Length: 95
Image (cartoon, rainbow, N blue to C red; front, side):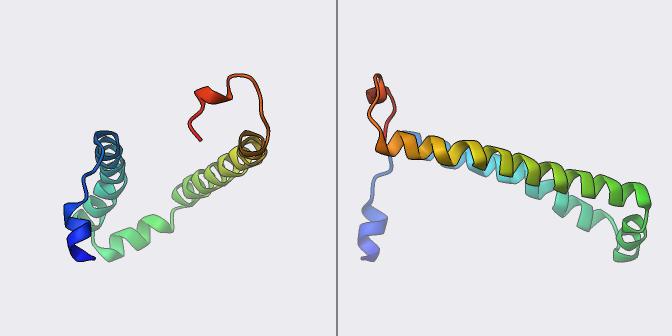
């Protein structure tokens, strides 16, 4: 089984998507790591006590949850239709 994993050939498109996903993760992780390296724990706690910072974090979390819910409400029925119904030009969509 281990040799199957090592001998597997990956498609170029899969490798491209993996590389792009890695770049996206780097944009998320690098600032967080930098913040923890350059600041001490007491500084982070003091910053977290600031009302503006807490409002900013709350707005970010609320916006991301609202966007996720909105897209889920739209995407779930759409994916059901794509999987179950036949329509013209369905062949253009790789399922």
